[in-house]
Image 1 (tube, one colour):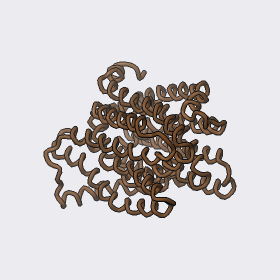
Image 2: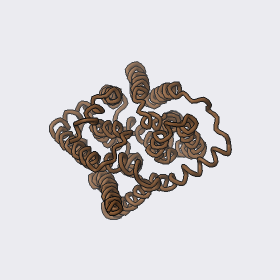
Image 3: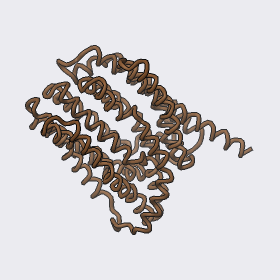
Image 4: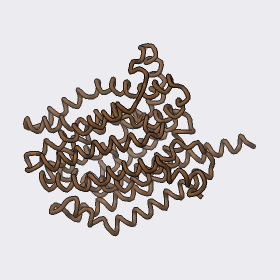
Length: 417
């Protein structure tokens, strides 16, 4: 089974230790920060911040071209050549920086258009920190080379600044604009950790090399970009909720989503840990899937036992039954995670054609948008059905990744015969 031999060694390796500490850091700090923010600024003001962070995060995902998985693969394959490794680390940064110059002005215009006061404009502009992070945070370097100690140091510095900032600079509802400012400063500090951790001989790429490599990346990215433009159920969901149901509903959704994302961490940790594993046997993926599935069931049961307690802790006097319903529905996403991690990130990205992952994403989101259109026409006022739509999107993509796995395995089995 999964826990045996090399797998056993990897599960108790130094890499896992660093990953675990970094994930715990991401877990502990929101437990302190979120209750303080919500109780201090209220559901409406906090929802305003979450809404604009959602807009920025959606723009950031478009800018990233969803290239982290492919970029990690390029870093992993370039370890034997210093020059290739340098290119595989720097190219995604340069490409995303160019895209940022195109996308960011639209974000500024949107902030100016919807802001009713000067303070709202300033607050919404500070919410652009996800775009800053997606350009300069080198996740592909970390995952591709297994440098999980860098994740730990960057995460600790970032969250420590957030914690100190929230504790000392939030005192009333009027301070809501300080929340994204604190996160912006923390993001910059995290970026500095990554920058000083990457040792490359030069930070300059020739124009001709940039053009050639850009074509190569965009050849893969065109499907990923189209897929991200269509992927409204992730960060786009908060934007839709804010436009349709109001900022308070954004906070309710965000708190539930935050808890679910925290619960995903053990599964994503295992996925990151085994990404650089070179074992592509059926037994490896079978055992990893079984372990992930058992873990998802265990975590999901915890939602029903401790979900209300968690929500009351996060929201305090703002707690309502609507929050619990939202959490229970969103927690169903946990059952799609084994499919997404094992057959998506850990198989399709590493062993299939470069554009396969993007094509699956486009197909999945096309189906999801059809469901969204049905909801918009017939169930526009139903918040709960919107939540089920979000859950279904993740499941559809996971099942398509599973289908891709068995299809490719079947082809390989026939070719061996």
